[in-house]
Structures are given as C-alpha cells and as structure tokens.
Image (cartoon, rainbow, N blue to C red; front, side):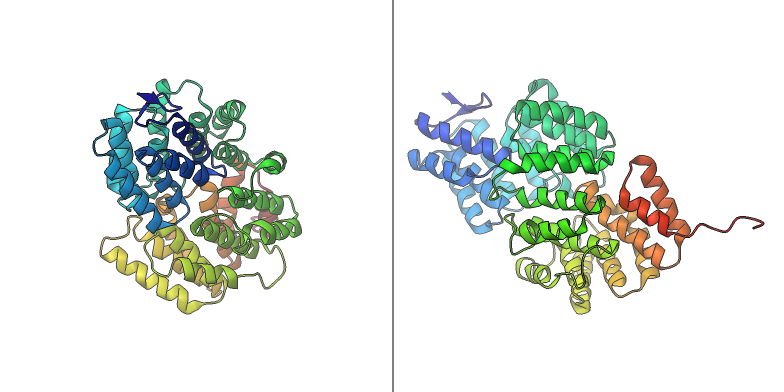
Length: 442
C-alpha cells in the first residue's frame, strides 16, 4: 500500500494522483493557493480516491461553499466504506465537520489522533481560532489546543507545520516569547507556511513589537499569493500595526486595497470579522476620516449571515450594523440570539447577545451602559472563539466607553494592567488622555 507525505497508508492505484493529493494537502495545511486545482487533478487521475474527495470537502468548507462541501464529503464517505480504519476514520471526522456536527467531529478527531497521531489534516480540524476546539464555546479552548498538541509532540519531531501551531498555542496561553521561539523554528523548516507566519504575527502582537511585526509581515507578504486564504487577514494585522505606529492613512489605504469586502479574497466570515473589527477600531481610536465605509460591511453581513447561530459572525454582524447606524438591525440580532440561548442552541451562551447589546449601546452614545455590559461579559469573553488579538476589540470598546462615561480611573486600571504585560502605543495614547486624579491635600 502507498503512503502519504505523513507516512500513513493511502488507498490509490495511481502514483500521480497521490503526488497531487500530497501537494494539495500541503498547500491546504499551510494556507497557500492552488489547493482545489491539485485535488481536482488527483480525483481526475483516480475518481475513487476517497481521501482526495475528503480533502476537497474540507477545502470547500473553508471557503463556505457548504453544499459542494457536503456533496464531496458524501462521496468520500461512500468510497471509504470498504477501506481500512485509518482512511474511514479520516473521512468520518471530515464528514462530521463538514455537516456541522462540531461536538461529534471533535470527539472523532480526538479518537482518531489517539490511533493515528500523524494524520495532519484530521488534526487541523481542531486547531486555530476558527477550529472545532475554538468554536466549542468553552472558555479554556486555547489551553485545550495546547494540551492536545503537547500530547502529540513525540510523534512529530521537528515538523514545520506542527511546530507552527504548537508555538501559537504557547503564544495564546501566556508564553509569547517561548511560542515565538518555536514558531521561528517552524518557519526555518517550512518558511512559506502561512499559518506559522500568522502565528508569528500574533507573537509580535502579544510581545508589543508592532514595528518588528510590521517589518516581518512586509517581507513575508511580498511572495504570498493574493488568492490564498490568509492574505486578507495578514493584511488586517499589518493595518493594525500601522495604526499603532501612527500611520492611520496607510492603514486605511490597506483596508481599501486588501481588507474591505470589495477587495478581500478570504471567505465571508473572516472577511466580515476583519473588515468590521478594523473599522470599529478606527472609530474607537479616532483614526481615519468620517464617515467610515460601514455600508459595504453591513451589506456583507446581511447577505452572508442573515440568520443567527454562528456566534463569531453574529458579533461582527452586530458590529457592522451598529457602525452603520442600523439600530433595528442590532436589536433584531440580539433578540434572535437571546432566543437561541434560551433554547440551548448557542454553545457560546449569553455572552454573545450581551456583547451585541454593548456594541449597540456604544454606537448609541450610551457609554455607561456599554461599559456595564462589557464588564458583565468580560469573564466569558474567551467563549466567543477568536484569538486574544481579535477579542481585544471588545476590551478596547470597554476602555473607550469608560473614558467617555467619565470613569477614567477604571479605564486607567485596565490600561496599566495591559501595559505591564506588553507595550502598545494606542494604550499609551489613551493613558495620556485620561486626567490624573487630584492629589490628596492638593
């Protein structure tokens, strides 16, 4: 029997099909362009190649082509039925994920990794800020990812893909320096791994190294295909570095060229999250001209996510509606989310409509209420998924609300705590804007 690039058995009679499959999976795992074409070639060479159909299903799912993804997953499942357990389990995990059965898919991933710890594509389902663990609705999802990866270390030696994710798990669990060292090792082994480049960017963020992060991404993005799935998001990071470095005009130009809905090359959900959170931050920081281009973001939210239930998208849809001045849209989204929570159908729970309410209050100028709601939500913030860098927009909104509500002392406490962890120019600008309390006896 043939083996794939991870030394796992694969059922196919066509060596050329396996070669194209390996190349396609390598690009899928490293967030590079050209995945679908390579998998289509593999299937053309061997129409019965179950794992190629499964990988194609996963690629289609990542691009939110849900009906096509389910069709490919069904085909893979039928073809895998007579195959050995490794291939059946691989296909089943992907089938469950593609069909939206997140809890069962995660159980399948864990069981499969216990038996086949080097099955990278199955493992990848659980990883990242949009993976099965992150979207489970649990507060400790970063810690869970780290624990899973650390349990698999003996099987992965010094693999550039695996260590990129392992390093990121350290970054997100409070060890950005140690994580950066692992990610640098990973990039040394696999320099064009976009997931590792993304992880390294997060390390720069958590270490407060905006200038170094900007320089790193400026160099790395030069040869990254615009069509690749992380092109928009890496430009989002670059734009936030630019804002922190005092280059708001450059950041807005980057938004118009590579981040906003009209130019983004990422799927709808990350496009919505990146564009909405970027414009919201611009509003918080007073960066860029007014009005900001909210209408196209609100239109994307209404078109791609008309119904609630995908919590991370719902939050950014509410953000877009609030930014565009659509009070009714925010209220409608909140009401629908609260109904899902009441029915036990939203894994992330009540924190999601609570945050949406806070965004609406801030947009309405009710800063005291926004601060109260955001304070109430703070303990459950991690449940919404995303990274620390992505969720920071809500803490930034809390700080801006406190400052505008005349609660500078509380805002100062948060800023002092953040600056003790890592430097950030925007935090220093905010801190400078808060009047010092009067001295006793002064």
